[in-house]
Length: 234
Image (tube, rainbow, N blue to C red; front, side, top):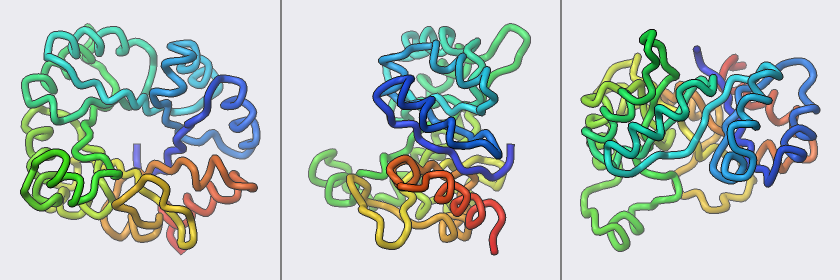
C-alpha cells in the first residue's frame, strides 16, 4: 500500500455509514472504523465494508496487559482488515504480544501500528495532565522508537512529527497522521494539525480525515481534493 487518504467513519451506525459511502461511485476509499462504529455494529460492519471493496483501518487502540492484548488481536486477525493498532503507552512487551496475537498460522497479518500521542494532546496537556515534562516531539519520537523495537510497522502521529520519525527510523517505517484540516475548517478537539498538502511535504504516508469530509456538504469533492493534494500533488 502506498500513500493514501483514509476516511474516518465516525458515524453512529451502519445505516448512516452505508448512506455516506454510497455517494462514492468512482472509487472505493480506504476507511477507518473506530470505537463508536465498531462497538455498536461489531465484526459485521468490517465484513460488510470489505465485501463492498473497501480497505479498512480498524482503529481500536488496544491498551492493556500483554496477554489480554494478545488475545484481543487473535480475535481480530481473521476479520480481513488491512491495518489495526494499539497504544504504544502499553510498552514494548505489550506491542510484541499484539504482534504475536495478530499473526496468523500461515505467517500473514494486517499492518500493525501504534499510537504515539493523540493529536488532541498539546504540550500543556502533556505536562500538566500527564506529568510528562519532555517536549512533545521528543516524547513522540521516543515512543516511536519503542514501536520500532517491538517490530511493528509504524505509528499514528501528528503530521508535524512524521518527518522526524522517518529521519530517525527510516522511510519504510509508516506514519499514519490524523489532525488534517483545511484553512478555515473548525479545529474541533485537535491540537496539532495541518492540511493535506503540508502533511505530504512533512512526510506522512497516510492521512486520516474525518469531519472535514464526513460533515461536508459535498464529501466526495472534498475527498477528491484531499487525494489530489496528498497523493497526486498539483
